Amino acid sequence: MVMFLIPAAIVALAAMVMMPMCKRSIDKKSAKRRVVINLSVFFGAIALFAATPIGGMIASAAEPAAAAAATGLTVGSGLGLLAAALVTGLSCVGAGIAVAAAAPAAIGAVSEDPKAFGKSMIFVVLGEGVALYGLLISILIINKL
Image 1: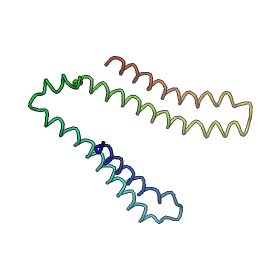
Image 2: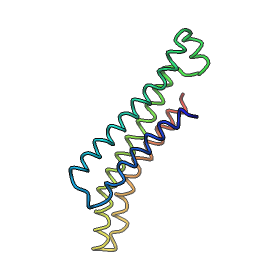
Image 3: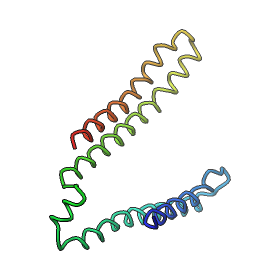
Image 4: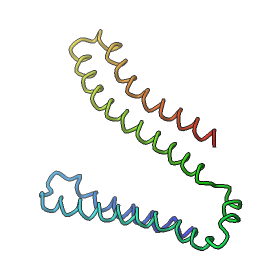
């Protein structure tokens, strides 16, 4: 339980550092300093997450076959889970970029001509479809594991 509280505290600290940046009256020097602090906290959390499982691997290095049999995880299943995470994440990023470009154009087209609503929504939905296809592929990958 304590293992999950430390990263949660780091993420909360990073969020608190970035909260004042939402104000419009912040100067550029202070904003740059907060970004540097936030990136330092973020990469510190990444290092903490990366270092945590290594301790468990070192402790069970004496009997690697017994440790693998006890957890049921292999290198292949780990790579499969990584692939599923990458498929979902990257497809959602791509869908976000597509929707960010298509939605304002669709709103502008509908404000000029209300009849263009159906045509413009097709392009927005196509961008969202990319995320759904990525989710579908990740589900298929996880089912194969």
